[in-house]
Length: 141
Length: 141
DNA sequence: GTAGACGATCTGCGCATGCTTACTGTTGTG
DNA sequence: CACAACAGTAAGCATGCGCAGATCGTCTAC
Image 1: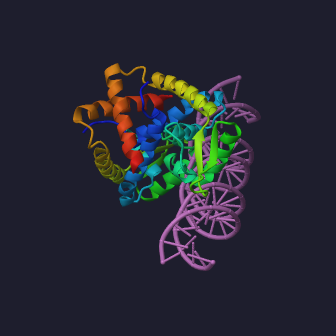
Image 2: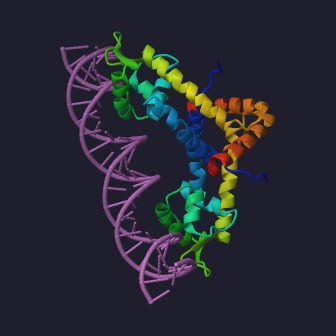
Image 3: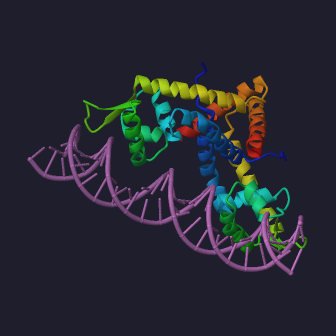
């Protein structure tokens, strides 16, 4: 019987550690973790409704609203009424938002590199690839 | 520039997914997640103080107390005053506790196997090994 | 056109969390 | 012996969370 931590426990610890390690990066850009999550989700393209955006970032749609307002007030994103269905508000990054999230990501990549510094490059690549696939699968559920 | 999720986001999603997937296993043993975490932490040996135990499971010591009382009432662990320093209560698994946690772990290993089912065995071994090492490092901080 | 569905928003409930304070019993140090 | 430090316990506070309900404006199907 192999002797190791439960995967769930390992994921939980690493989540905590990453949140803590990334906090200075986000604070340097005056962003909360959820702000970054939202901006990051919009990088692949606008969200056609706020409800859809709430779903992709796994956050309650009512709790998402203050975040969107803050980010819009800072000029990082725009909410435009959808002319085809005026119930919807399309959420899209602005140029400034794209810059901020790119800068954040660069900082976060450094933190990640630090975490993985002691892992041999070959194993590191496999680890990251598998993690990415598993995350996709977990997200799809 | 490689196109992938942030590690932190991946860890967070997988944590959620594992908590959800393991819930039926724990419920079958009438355990909360924290109950399992406590019992699991005690598997390697008794905790010489409750504060130390709280620290290893990363839980506030005052919040740990009701958990310990519940588990002790169910006969899964024992809190014995330390004769050498009667301020301390040594927390140790009972035989029943050891059985329950072993049974839980077996169920959780199945859930984990399910998660990793689509990963090729060689990559799976590397992934699990690296994850385990990273978790240890994150925990030590 | 009327009814039902849906998106955005607001408000509030219940729950879990980490922290803080306070109290008691115990230890050991000066 | 007195006093500071520490473990265990209890109680309270502020925060953040998901979720439910209500409202309003907007579609869409009949």
